[in-house]
Amino acid sequence: MRKILLALPAGALLAILFFASFLTTEHEESDLSLLKEKYSQKYTPPVKHLEFEILQKPFASPQEVTAACISCHNLRHLEVMKSNHWNWEREEYIQGRGVVYIGKHNVLNNFCIGVRGNEPKCAKCHIGYGSTTDGLAIESAKNVDCLVCHDNTETYVKADEQGGAPEKSLNLNLIAQSVGRPTRANCGICHFYGGGGNNVKHGDLESALFEPTKALDVHMGTDGSNLSCVDCHTTKEHNISGKMYSLSSMNHNRVTCDQCHGETPHDKDILNEHTLKVACQTCHIPIYAKEHATKIYWDWSTAGKLKNGEPYEEEDSLGNHTYLSIKGSFVWQKNLQPEYFWFNGTASHYISGDVISDTSKPVVLNELHGSYRDPASKIIPVKRHRALQPYDPVTKLLIQPKLFSTRKGDGAFWQEFDFQKAAAAGMKALNLPFSGTVSFIHTDMYWPINHMVSSKEESVTCKECHTRKNGRLAALTDFYMPGRDYSKVVDFGGSSLLLLTLLGVLAHGSLRIISAFRNRK
Image 1: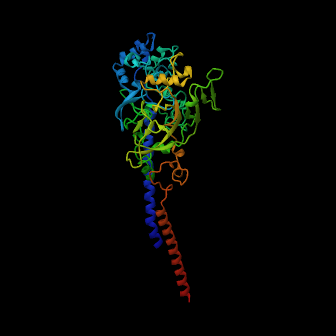
Image 2: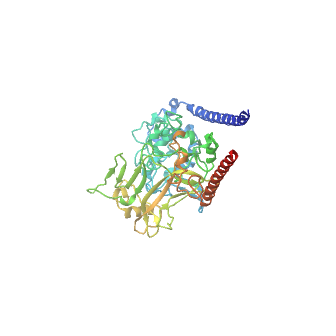
């Protein structure tokens, strides 16, 4: 009877725990079911552009298509012309600088380095037409390219080196009659190929995401939720939410997981407690560059070599360029484990003309801000891209070389393979000094990883971080993490308690044995 009375409370406690767990799991599954139901309702266009009379007339130029779009969607072009997608810059507050305008015109990267002077080439990914080095194209509404974002035929493509103009062979009527909500193809045709090729820049944005499986991205998988980019990157007045910290500095207009999943999405409290300091991506994106390799190192110092007076290229076994005369040497990798940083949503940037104060260490081109003590900071996964790129050892400025031209004679590196001439022409375009000497310096860029989300079964496990050696978070040393870190005082105290407990048990047992032995006598 006594055993039964003791077992009842324990049984009741177990039942309560089981019931609570069951309810929570049901709640979680209900939330996910609602999300799946919401996004399974695919978008249906409210109108049929095919039937519009104005789209029946033959279009001699893409600007005529824009005029037809504006005749119905009046004032929408003005929204586009206010966006950073159009202007390639935005107003930002940067710690230590104040309010500045930054963008592709004045922020350098460690891939193709900079836009200024190379606009006709770079504008293949601009949402406008007629880009030239004078920058006047963005002042004309007729140059707004509606089709690059709204074509639903998946045939619209920009021409090479034509300032943003589309291929001349396109059927503009067919495309104009088939416009609609942006698809993955519209976004991916630019964002998957940033830096000059598939998956060069981001590592988590690449051509495999045109038709991904759940194994590649659990949200975008065509065999799963099949989400499009604009399901998360929502738009208001042609301003698209979400930011790339290669160019952005402020913590606003971001896209976060908890906007759909809430701040405590797990059925276990211990996991929900992690969300205070660990971003969802940190656990749920254990690897990136799952399908195709991404570029992790770019050496500009080897560029310019020729064979028989002609530029050449070399490839690895996967078809990735490992050397190009026009760009230098590269290292590619796939199935990469991210590096991890504290990040509070703000960043600072190297801006053209900044003097490098310490040339003995890599120049960080987009420093991510954050720390354990910052309540707004969380640990995020990051791709770090390293490079060796040109700089002026006299002025201590990074050099933005002029790369592109359609002819020889104006200093473009891709025509003349002369770094001194390219540096002089590029720095002149930026109105910055150049000493005449070109050297090379190591630089780092940080690319937060947000795509290629894995299922919960494939997410990072506890022991991959909570381990003494070679854990994923080994480089973050500004906080105490159980299982990884230890304290001599705590360890001594714990060991002493264990020893005292053991001695107590032995002493108690010995006394019981002695007592029993004496009682028998």
